[in-house]
Amino acid sequence: MGGAVSAGEDNDELIDNLKEAQYIRTELVEQAFRAIDRADYYLEEFKENAYKDLAWKHGNIHLSAPCIYSEVMEALDLQPGLSFLNLGSGTGYLSSMVGLILGPFGVNHGVELHSDVIEYAKQKLDFFIRTSDSFDKFDFCEPSFVTGNCLEISPDCSQYDRVYCGAGVQKEHEEYMKSLLKVGGILVMPLEEKLTKITRIGPSAWETKKILAVSFAPLVQPCHSESGKSRLVQLPPLAVRSLQDLARIAIRGTIKKVIHQEAASRSGRGLKNTPRCKRRRVRRRRMETIVFLDKEVFASRISNPSDDNSCEDLEEERREEEKTLPETKPDPPVNFLRQKVLSLPLPDPLKYYLLYYREK
Image 1: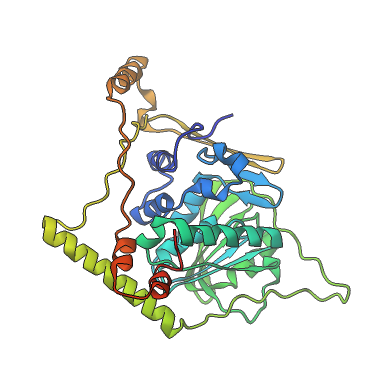
Image 2 (image 1 turned 180 degrees about the vertical axis):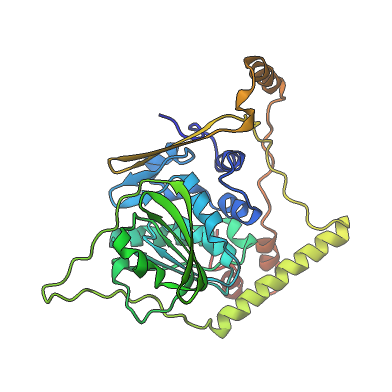
């Protein structure tokens, strides 16, 4: 059974198909998905499946299907400066995409049950910060992950603007999940086989919307210690950024402005987007999603208005594709921020500090 795209297609083509099927609907969400390559969160031997619209599980490591993450990101209605709590944060893929939107003055916390997955997520986060040119195009809110059961969060923890739970929530835990949310905040979670969006519109007033039929593995119930007491999870403190951090954010922001001004003076139109290779034309078609979670299967079908195209139309489209000239691979995109920092008359340690210690 296949997903939205076939093996060999890249991250951009996956995003194209998610847009085509209306899973991705806003520019902010699209930018976040394009900035982080989903394959980077797979183990090497499984990367051939990274761009299919399928969930992936290996041991304790788990990624939901791209269509699920798309719906979650859209439902959360993310904005710079908000606080976000990811319950069952897993590989950190979703948390990192969220961090691209929250910006440097947001809060980005994750709780994960398995310590080996926490370690995996930290490695992937470090890889993204150190190696990805996308990192320099955004002001990033770096996620912080803690180990523990998300049903045992300390009752004196702060509430959040946005909360997502990546496991099936039993009805008896609904009120607990709501208690983590600020007034005006949004909670997205699988509840009673439906991906559900709950908005807190008052101290005791809620607005609920069912988004999508899903099947998630249920939350793991807490295991009490021998004393009978639960092990409370302490979330990271809401710390104020250091002066050093604020200086780096300000300097990088100033350099970006200089780059845009220089480009504007040269072209009169502002910084042009780096040309990307011509993408294969995305054929409008039914988009089927098959999501495997343990022994459960979730399936959905989204029909597009163009599904009724005749065979002749599809044949004509195929001939047009065949006539397309061979694709030429463009030069790799230039990281203007990195170039500008390296050209500054500064000691190397300070340059690398401004580049988040990247020395590639």
